[in-house]
Length: 89
Image (cartoon, rainbow, N blue to C red; front, side, top):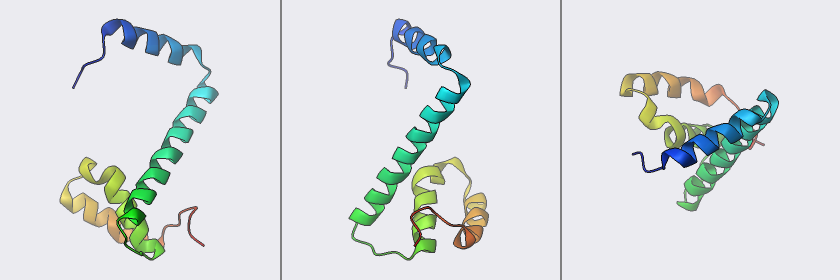
């Protein structure tokens, strides 16, 4: 989908390029943190009480599930139980 006028795209790119690499990295980090919080909130709002490994798998599927083939998703998800999230207690 491409519904953004060219003038707005150019203005947005100019704004991004005017920021330092560190500022762009911080923006990206904040956006990722927001996506992660929203995804976790959505998963938990579905009323499921998940242990941390299962929550990590659901979070992976919610954010990246469409980016991988089924076999790749399965290989990644096999490794997820050993990973930690900052939400783990």
